[in-house]
Image (cartoon, rainbow, N blue to C red; front, side, top):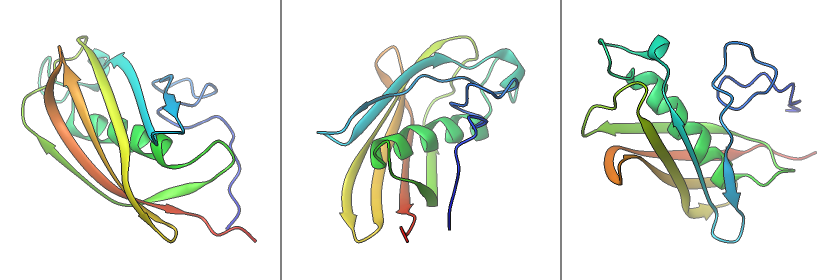
Length: 133
């Protein structure tokens, strides 16, 4: 399967007018990635509380960035999130992800969302590298 980047990704796409425009940092040596942002009020679930789907989306993107190098493409095969504390909209958060292991085309990843250094959300995912022709 061939995929093309049109910069419309909801999380990091520069061309998506409705997107989050997240700038994600990556360390290829440690297979980790991180970003900081604040969830806008328009993505609240309950008043003032960031929607769990948005938080899971942020984790997904950062864990994917930890997995795939700039010239690789891949998809999320499975994702799980555990919400330990609410994340308030407008509050600065740090999203971190790293690769735990890789077997063939599948990488197991873990990630967290931190608020003031405390874990509020934990996640894990299986990232699948697309086959190259």
